[in-house]
Each structure stands twice: as structure tokens, then as C-alpha cells.
Image 1 (tube, one colour):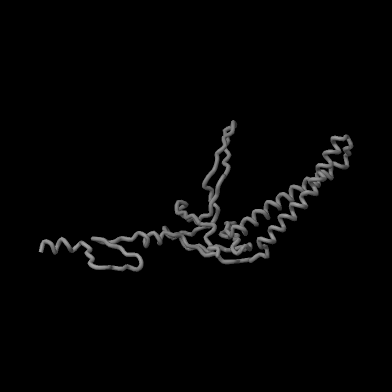
Image 2 (cartoon, one colour):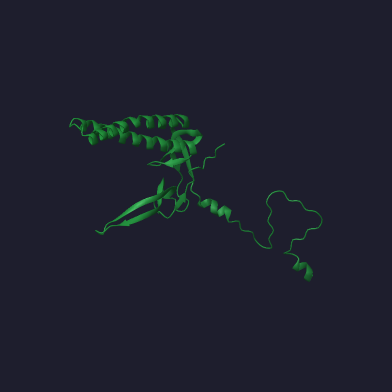
Length: 209
């Protein structure tokens, strides 16, 4: 009888035993924490609002064209600068230099914009915008999406989707003022009731086939 009671909490196998799938052996109760953890996962669903005609190929060509046009104001600015060095500067030239400078700044801004959009389409990632909207490059095409978010899994509050600052540098000046420079942001789902209820969102969550 003593041996029988001692063997009740033991797993004895004789012969050959095959198992298909996950198997757990325990002398007492089994508690799987995954089922509890799944309840504390924020869920969201993107809804395409506008599928743009801008594909990776089109964005690449636009970036190249803007870069070529950018050479025109640069050449004019250099030409005007050479005229100044040669002593041929005229008052009426001043307005043309300012015009070409403005055009150059605009082209630089457009180049940075389309190059950033090209990066989104190339990597096929999702980037938060404002008011729970996002821009997605899935399928190598830009799409504007509305992000529908479930209630906070911890407190049931409303949540928002945005780029949250996670790294920064505080610059201190002699006048006592401090300026914070954000160095890194990540997309998150954050509860509006309690900012500590925050969940990181993978920008490349959509699987690329």
C-alpha cells in the first residue's frame, strides 16, 4: 500500500510512447500563463480609407525628377555668386537670387517628403499620422488607413495610436531654459485614462508574402 500511494504522483511509461503536439507532465496542477497574458494585449484593426496611385516605382521616379530640377536653382545661385566675386553684381540680380533660393528650399522639402514616402513603400511599414489615422506601404503602395482600436484591456478606457517619444536629449542653456530634442519615437497604442497602459505596435506587423 505504501508503494501504491507513493506512485500516484509519478508518471510511469512502459514500452514505446509517441506524442504529437505539445505535451505537459506534472505531479500537481498546471497553470499556463499564456491564456492570462493574451487578455492584456491591445487589439486594433486598420481600415483602408484611400488607396493612392503612388507605388514604389512612381515615388522613385518622382524623387529622381525633383533631384534633377533641384540642379537648376543651384546652378543659378552659383552663377550669381560668381558674378559677385567678379564684381559684376547688379541690384536687379538680388531678386532673382532670392527667387532661386526659395525654389531650391521648396524642392529640397519635396525631395525629403517623397523620399520618406518611398521609404515607407519600400519597407512596407505602417506609420501613425494623427487622430488614429496611419499611412501604410503594404504591397509597395501608399494607403491611408483609419485605425480602429478596442478598449484598453486593463481598464476599458479609450486608446489612441501615435508615435510616442521614447528617447530624447535635454539641452540646458545659460539662461536657465531647457530644450528637449526627441531622438526616437515608436508607434504605440496608449490608454487615454492611464498612460502607463501602453503597448508597442510593430510597424512591420503585416506579413510580406
